[in-house]
Length: 326
Length: 151
Image 1 (cartoon, helix red, strand yellow):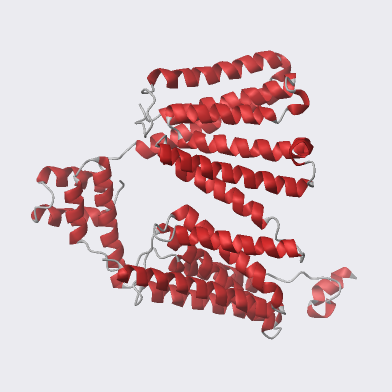
Image 2 (image 1 turned 180 degrees about the vertical axis):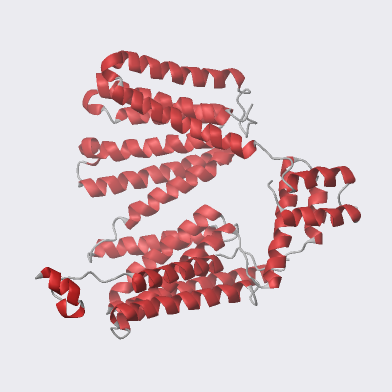
């Protein structure tokens, strides 16, 4: 809610017509004229800036004070700060619930994310300075992903859940260069990376589906599905380069997957997956058809015409669907 | 801005305020709906997903059309480029006005894309028109003072 002369002008008529009571119109008029301001946005901005400042400050502390404090003291300091944040969250949080939880205060989510980020930074610092995992250091990303996922489920944080999934995908991405021979000894680096991305994507989509079916944090499902589909589509798109038959198969696969995703989410017009599906299918369509067009000018005209045709088709289909709706 | 479009924006701000009042618990849902009914929406609006696609596809189509004009058009040099960018700025601006006026579109993605591109093309045309070509020793005849100093 903010200052709005249009709303201030509309309020007397709404009060006169009995839509708003005089008390409501008076309060809303003061808000619309800017006499009452909400501190909500400012508080969120300050908390967000505070999280950024503290995490940035930790980076500077590690960089500049390492000689004065020593690595162990830095690890203990960051760990204590993380424990402080997470301990406060554990003390004030309501008991675990399978569904949504109401946060106990405006600062709760920010302190939770700050604590989780500090904990991840502490683990990374310990791994870098003391190398407890040695050459298997990428596994610490899996530890971070597991901790973030546990915190996300306990404290009902979609932000932390997204961070957990990203850390998990990062673990596979980083590990694939060092550990690829363990899992994909037969494959080259790029293929191994794509296969890992594909596997992560399928795992995330399946996990989200399971959470929804079992009604355990079902509202996390869109996060898992979106990140999972991004990984799947990027993994498939990564194989489109070149003129080999495999490249054409990847283009066809991307077209089919994108079209299926777009059609599946057409009814809901879901922002993430619908847009992702349509754009993936369109990119695959261009990759399939553009090589057959000679000349840069003709190709540009083709892209322009196909984009207009796709948009017109989507709008016409929507109009038809709305016309057919009861 | 056409008066009808301005009135539609005023009505939308009242409806948006009513939604915010209901979210904050200052009025109930029925009251918010009654406010919205008194300020009806006469615009074509798209949901977020389609709006995003409309924005991306419109921008892509216009930029591809610009690339087509530059590729197949006569090589007019710097002033040819300025003319093409200026023409696209005018067409995008006219397209935006048409969408917001007679076509009664708002929050539909395409009009935002053409508005942004109109500003972008105008900026590019202005920059290209005002940008002075670098004087090099290879072009002394067009700039006698520079030619004299380079000797």
